Image (cartoon, rainbow, N blue to C red; front, side):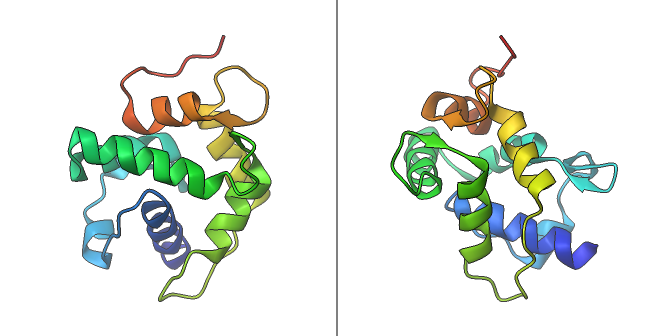
Amino acid sequence: MTEDFSCQVKKMALALGTSLTDKDIDLLPSDIRHHAAFNYSKFFEYMQQFQTPSEQQEQVRKAFQLLDKDNSGFIEWNEIKYILSTVPSTMPVVPLSDEEAEAIIQAADTDGDGRIDFQEFSDLVTKEKIPKKK
């Protein structure tokens, strides 16, 4: 479980434009793990401390564009699964489960359409506004 967790954290950090070492992962707050699962909302919140506001906005835009493989203006679960399975890693790649991909979507999908637009993604990762279900 620990290797799976470390691998997923590193993939998510890379998708957000940051890399984490094993030591960084060991220092992650315990509330990022929720019932032995990865808590994506807490992770995005935690990652804010590593960037200035302008760097953060640029990284948010780049991360969104990276995840939006078909340039539709939305991130769907299949795009999340794809990008996280192709991010280079020094560890063996552990495929993201359908449930984990769906958890990412649910963490940000404030309008309930089953996909993430840029504003929802930005709200999630910057926490300037706390996303709330409409």
